Image 1 (cartoon, rainbow, N blue to C red):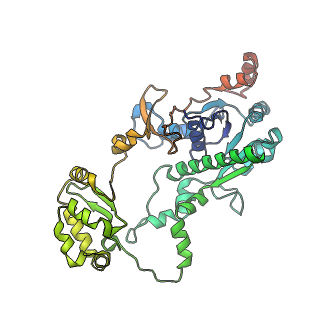
Image 2 (tube, rainbow, N blue to C red):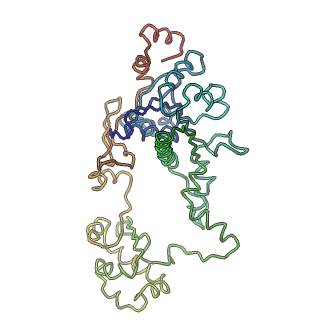
Image 3 (cartoon, rainbow, N blue to C red):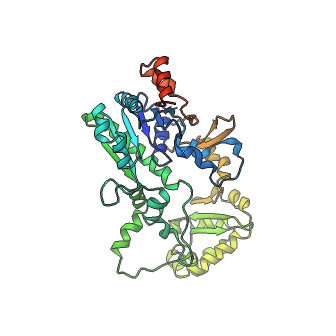
Length: 404
């Protein structure tokens, strides 16, 4: 574990991935993150892994592990007076309160901004929402597939013009970036509180996150609303040295040689096609643009002469930027991912060891130490004892159902 947030306590009353994964990031930065879960049902994310997935995986509930690694779980029924009172005691000693509950639920449970600040005026209050906290749809829920991917324009931006259907989002794609964004906002709020004494309310929405991710296209769309803009497909890209090329065995290599004239001679050398340097159609950037269709087809033909692995070996000394199109399984053996600690080994409660991607921020050139997610209510007794309760008092709360 890294210690940049050592001594910071976070109370999380949230479910699924978007907001909880911010707590996972904070825990890897050294914060003590206490996840409050309903004693009976827990976070519904705990059951998602069984929805339509094939058996296997060594019993690893990876869809829960990813956003909840490194936390402590406390089972509290905050719909009861006793459970809510215990939550408030936790809040009194905390630095951050994080939630993604909808406004009416926050109000009913007594965990809205004013409720929490009444117990701790200096706490940073954090909300993750689908569409923001204002406007006619502020009370509606949202998942990343809807609020981020569909509503913010990403699905249609990624759709090929000739395709019958838009591109579907991959699991939790917007959620994981949203959680990292929330964690950054919390870090900034902690610094502000230290310097000015002001406790911020932090808001991040999936809709805003999607607009941010698609910023160049969102901004230009309005600027050029009534302008006919030239369009380019894979066969007519303006710079033929930026694109994806198929290999002999059906895999792909991507070139991103933005400074095309600078890298063209070196690329031709690695392709073992020095004759292309003398071809008047490809002599410089202007010529390659004019004859971009022919240039792309020639490059595709060259890449089809060798296998994916052969190109990976040959292009190791290429001066410009390129990459193999790897599968999620192949990245486990990526030399850079391994060397930098980007995939950390974790042991699940089942005893199965597996790899989790570490959060992408490192401090002091040190990879974060990733811990597994907690069991449902695993740390209830531990945390309540830290609050000063006795075992007898904890038992009484268990009898009433206020705690797990």
